Amino acid sequence: MYDLVLIGAGISSLMCAWKLRNSGLKMCIIESGRQITQRQCPRKTGVTQCHCSSCHIMQGAGGAGAFSDGKFIINTEPNNYGGRLFEHIGWDKGIAAIQEVEETLLHFGAPEDCWENDGVFEKKLFGTGLWMEKAKVRHLGTDHNLAVMNRLISEVEKFCSILYGKTCTSIWREDSCYHVAMECEVLLAKKVVVATGRSGSQFVKQLCYEFDVPITNNTIDIGVRVEVEGKIWDEVCQSLYEPKIYGRTKTYEDVFRTFCVNPYGEVVAENVEGCTSVNGHSYIEKRLPNTNFALLVTMKLTEPFHNIDNWGRSIAKNCNQLANNNVLVQRLGDLRRGKRSNADRIASGRVTPSLTTATPGDLGLGMPKRILDDIVEGLEMLDVVLPGTASDDTLLYGVEVKYYSVTPEFKDRWFEIAEDLWVIGDGSGVSRGLSQAGAMGIITGERIVI
Ligand SMILES: Cc1cc2nc3c(=O)[nH]c(=O)nc-3n(C[C@H](O)[C@H](O)[C@H](O)COP(=O)(O)OP(=O)(O)OC[C@H]3O[C@@H](n4cnc5c(N)ncnc54)[C@H](O)[C@@H]3O)c2cc1C
Image (cartoon, rainbow, N blue to C red; front, side, top):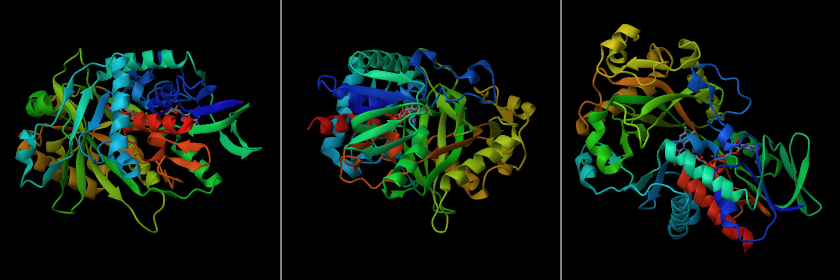
C-alpha cells in the first residue's frame, strides 16, 4: 500500500514528489515511457515514419518537457500565458508556486538568464491590431533543460521509486483505497495524482467518465511554423526572448498568436498523436542562421460538433498525405500565388530551411482556407512591426496543431476531482507549459500533506 501514487513522470509529477521529499510518505511514480537517458527519437537519425510504442519526445522521465526548448514562463500579471492556472487558484497562490518551481530548477542548475518585457516593443504594437501578454522568460535551452531534468529525477529517485515502461490503464476506489491498474499488476494507494500530460489526455477523459466528472473541451490551435532570417526578429528577441504577440484578423476577426519563438534555432519534425508535426528548438551553445516561431489560430467549434481533436488531426493528416507522411514546407510567396513550392524555388529564397527533410509542397491543398487566410493576414500584420516577417521567402512548415486536454470539473480549486484523487499538469487542460504544470505539482504537494 502506497501513501501516494503519481501517474506520469513529467514536471508536474516531479515537482509534486519534490515538494513531498521530507514528508515521509511512501510514494511511487508510474511512467509509461523510458528513463531519461534512454529517450532517443529515431527521427534524429533521419527516420520519417514513427513506430515507437511510446513517443520519446512526449513520453518518458522528464515528460514532454525533457526535450523542449526549456522556455520557463514566469507571468508578471494574471494572464493566460502558459495556461489558466490563475483562473483556478488565484494570482498570489499561483505565482508563489511558479516561483518555487523556478527556484527548484535553479537549484538543479538552470541558467540565470531571464528576459523581461520593458514595454518598449509593446508600444510599437499600439494601433496595429496586435497586443502582447506579458511574462518573464527564463531560457534553459534544449541542452541545459535536459541536464536539469536529469538531476531533478536522480534526486527524486532517492525517496520515490519510479516504475518505467508501465502504463496505468485504470483507477478505481474500493475498500477505502485506490486501485491503480497497469497491464499486469495493480498497486494500492491512499492518494493518487494523475499527471499524465497531453499524451495522457484520453486517459483523463476516460477517468472522468468513470468517476462521473463532467468535462469541457472545444478549443484547438492550428497553424504553421514560420521560419525567417534571424536578423528580422533579432532586436525583439534580444529584449524579450519570446514575444507572445496576439492579433485579431480583420477578415474573419479570428484571434491568432505567436508561440514558441526560437531565436537562431531550428525547426524539428515530431510525432504528435500519430501525425507528423513541427516544432522548434534553440540552444544556448549553438546559434543557427534562422529564427522560427509558430503562428497559431485559435478555433472554437460549437454544437453539434463534439470532437475538435479529430478535426485537428484530420487537417494534420491531410498535410502529411501530401508530403508522404512528412512535414510540408512552402515559401510564403508561393502560397500567395497559389503555387506549390519545389526544391528549386525553396533554394532560390533567402531563407534556407533548417528542417532539411521537409517536403516542399502546397499548404493550400491541405489546410482550410480560413486558417490559411488568417495566417497570411497575421504575418502581414506582424510585418508592420517586424519588417521582413511576411517576405515572399519566409518559410511555412505545416501543420502545427496544439490540442487542449479536456478540463475536468474540479471539486474545489485545488484540482481534486474525487476524494484524494487529483488531476494536474497539461493533462488537466489547465496548464500549457512547464511553469504552470510544475506549479500545479507544488500546490498539490502542499494539499496532500495538509
Ligand atoms: C517539443 C515540445 C517543446 C515544448 N517546449 C516548451 C517550452 O519551451 N516551454 C514550456 O513551458 N513548455 C514547453 N512545452 C510544453 C511542456 O513540455 C509541457 O507543458 C509540460 O511538459 C507538461 O508537464 P506535465 O507534467 O503536465 O506532462 P508531461 O510532461 O507531458 O508528462 C506526462 C507524462 O505522463 C506519462 N503518461 C501519460 N499517460 C500515462 C499513463 N496512462 N500511465 C503512465 N504514464 C503516463 C507520459 O509518458 C509523460 O511522460 C513543450 C512541449 C513539447 C512537446
